[in-house]
Image (cartoon, rainbow, N blue to C red; front, side):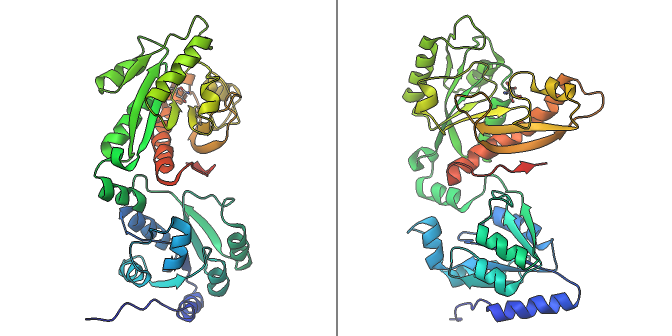
Length: 367
Ligand code: GRF
């Protein structure tokens, strides 16, 4: 039987780096656990490799994976993970490291480019790692996430076969209007880009397209009479919505064009678990008619924001944003239509990350 694969040493990688530099070429460095390799990893690594002329992957040792991911991981031994990674076209060398952070490796390898997956921003990188990168003169590049693919979701599928067995994210979607975001969430569920379950849809508009889409898709759909004020919900309606959410055992409440203001008891009971999608780059243009406000302000760029909902309108923590250019001659309608195209990608992506990793931590802007 052939012997176990032997990963590269730091000295090997430094030689590689120095040889590249002599030829005016660049070494790319990235790091991670790479436990069960999937297409998301492969695409990420291909993109990272394209930033330079060779790439080294720093692989978390078994001991550090246990610290980062819990006692049941990794599934594969470090030398096996290294062997699989090293067989990829994009990977030139693999080193195994024992710390949770790659700081010491960065200091000794001094790579030309450091690549990291898109759930980070430059600001959210670990402070010590960032300082080490700055001291080494390393260029930092954040690459977009490949949605819907992760080791965790693969493991969940293998364990349960279906999501209810593995505690999938149970979503409630609340809307008042057209329902295009609801449609986008349904499409993401159907394509497998989002691994979750819509446990409830709810609207304050009995004849809304939102409810028609929900019913046509066979989803549990509720109308709640909010009362006479179009922006407010009566106390009875606030309570009724809370009861629907509780009965449906909802994990996350998604406001997708829900035009009335949610208050107690929902706001406290679901604190940190309510998200809203808003058609501007918050904190700019809070409230209604954001696309028109953006045109009136002469903005050259606007976009959409997915953020946590708090008692203060459009002011909760920003989870993700996407930019959209304001074009000459744009009306509120044409601009809003282009913003929605971005919303339809961003919202399912945030929900999927939530399911896989818990509450998203980025304030990243994608364009
Ligand atoms: C979206 O633009 C969202 O940002 C805003 O309301 C709109 C809802 O659109 N909060 P739809 O009903 O999902 O088509």
